[in-house]
Length: 329
Figure 1 (cartoon, rainbow, N blue to C red):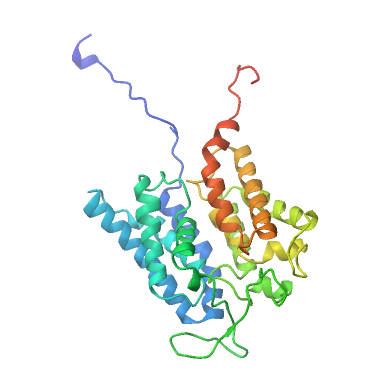
Figure 2: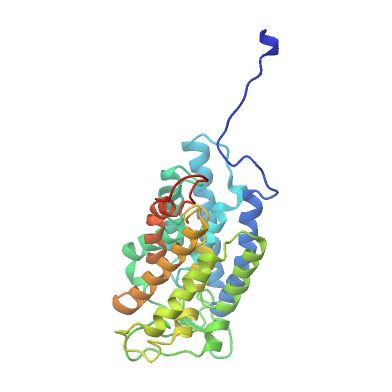
């Protein structure tokens, strides 16, 4: 056979079938689904909360651009929206009154250390925003654990304008003296908390839209929320609070909705198999409840998802479907 007649068979790794969706479309759709929770946060906590979100997004985008262009010599891909999502999610899990430099430090850590140190998009082990939040928890414990604000009676407050605000304990404060909030307040977001996690209804609507679009597998949020609901009802709680064994309160309060719909469902750091996604969601629910019930820290969403991110490879290994014709293990 002559050289002119030779044909080359190019074999590449799966997937071999391309769908209509691409990374930018998925990422910017997620940004849109996150917008309602952010708007509620800005309405409740004032324009300083918007300032924190903008700082976090700008720091994440600039860090990614600098690393790709000057350190890695790669094309700058900030248009895909992945850095924007990291910046938004990081801001959403910060208290609304944190100093301006905290979202900047957190965003740089998320992009430079958690994402690009492991090879960039698709190679990171942990969710970058949550890993940055855990880092900030250790680096700046005082501002991260204080200044839980609520809407001032009669209007919005803002750090920039100097209008007075009210600070109260987090809805998950475990000791006597903490306030119990009604379900309506927890749904609408009229409670102290982080910028983008207070309004459960805004997060639920955004999450359901992503499930409808097929960008989020329902198994993760369903397994996560159902597990917290069941365990919160039946586990003996060592919490000195009237809501200790109120499963609805546990589901609506804190960062559970944000974590279940937008962070535990991260395509990069969650399992690939359907059975693995359910195991992942249940594991997040178990760890979240155990931390809330038996640890000193009031919230368990951040660390539970990070721990399950670490377990993702082994979950994938033991939940792979059996090959056709292969005997039982």
